[in-house]
Amino acid sequence: MPLIVVTTSPRVAPGLLSHQAWQAFRSGRVLAGSEDHPHLPYLAEAGVEVQVVTPDARRLARQAVEDTVVWLADDDEDFMRAIGHAAIELPEPPVIEVVPGSYDLPGARVLDLVAVMERLRAECPWDRKQTHETLVPYLLEEAYEVLETVEQGDYSALREELGDVLLQVAFHARVAEGFDIDDVAQGIVDKLIRRHPHVFGTVTVESADEVNANWEAIKATERAGKDTFDGVPMGQPALSLAAQLLGRAERSGAPDALASAVGQGVARELWDLVRRAHEAGLDAEAELRAAARTYRDRVRAWESGQQPG
Image (cartoon, rainbow, N blue to C red; front, side, top):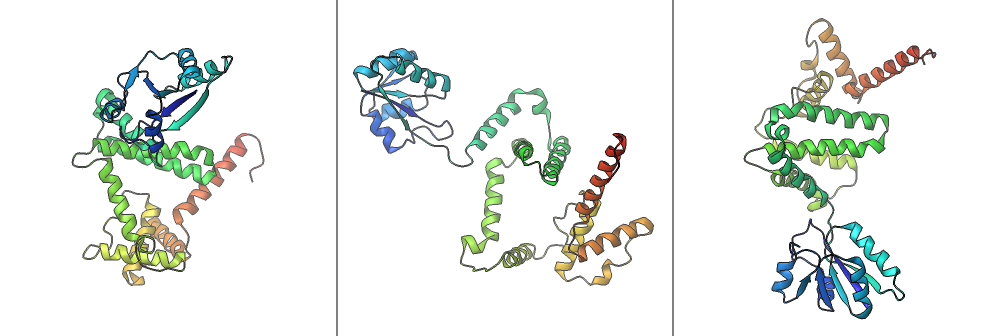
């Protein structure tokens, strides 16, 4: 006789089970290890009798030798392994069949982050006192750490750094009043669909350049009636700020003469350098960062007694 183990995901609403799981529940004696299992009320409503027992791997394995036993599993992986060990110790081991009752969809782990953030906000004194203003430095720091891992090609570290950025998004969404993480996600989903009519609509494109042109045209429509620089974060690093202002002005049709002779002294020289980089299709911020890394490496080589490159 088989031992059928039905697994479920805590990230899927209780009661939503696969067809195979419902068939399994009606094929033999159904046991569960906790009266608090979230699926029990729904099984009872469907007329499935479940007996709550003390989890005992050896007893389960022995019972499955004589009868079909269906075990409603929880998230205790150690107990699942214990069932397997107990079964193979028997002279005639039962067949163990695992039936997924529900599956995690892509992105399901974000629900774990939301749940953890909810608890931290309620129970941790430090998390509880944070505001949007106090969290901003951490968001900037984590974003720059992502940038550093990409520039260094350290993609093994990128996963962790992206997680730190995601935490900041979840934290701000939890602190917010008037919206939550679902509203944040819905907003960006709506924007992505709206700006990709070649994917979600009837527009046809042949190249990435056409996609970019459509994107900019849609953005221009959305900004109709607004200032050319509406939405440009003035608190960003000065080189990237200057480049973004130049790009916005160029797309709006501003005369080239407006970009000449801006500022005085060093400020004018820096502005001219950014303008030249923009005209050449270069990112002034990235170029200077690359030069800074080269300088850093030379100083480190000098400190270690090596010949600077």
